[in-house]
Amino acid sequence: MSHSTSCDRAARAGIDQAGFTLIEVVVALAVVAVSLAAIGSLMATTVRGMRAVDTRLALIETARAIETSLPDRSELKIGNVSGEFADHRWRVDVLPFLTGDVAASATNPWVPQTVIIRVQSPTGAIIEIDTVRLRPRTGQ
Image 1 (cartoon, rainbow, N blue to C red):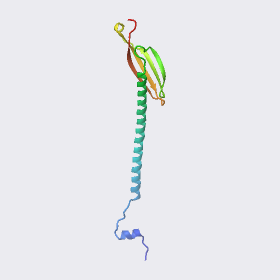
Image 2 (spheres, helix red, strand yellow):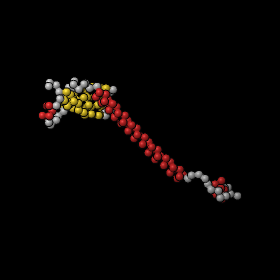
Image 3 (cartoon, rainbow, N blue to C red):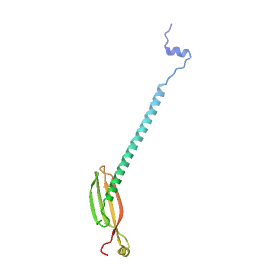
Image 4 (spheres, rainbow, N blue to C red):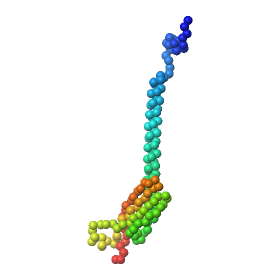
């Protein structure tokens, strides 16, 4: 009498084997690994994007705070000023606004000035805002 294993007996009895083959398990693990890698990459990209947006918003808010603290238009003088605010370095340059029409600008009661606000975050990101402010002409 020969010894037979339970697998041989089940096969002779016509009972199908339930379960996965080794190849099916390896393929399933590969699919899971690729999916996890894609999810991880997506999360890393999202985190980098959120940090960039946070940095940009902080720069914009700092620039707005500096702009609102500029002197009154009648006191705004040509030159530059710099400082630090909320760990952000900033610089404001006030320059004459150059126009091509000298005759019209001489009769205008307002003198336009270019105002450049430059803010740098602790991480090195920079924002620069250029605007024009009108100052009343003096000595008329």
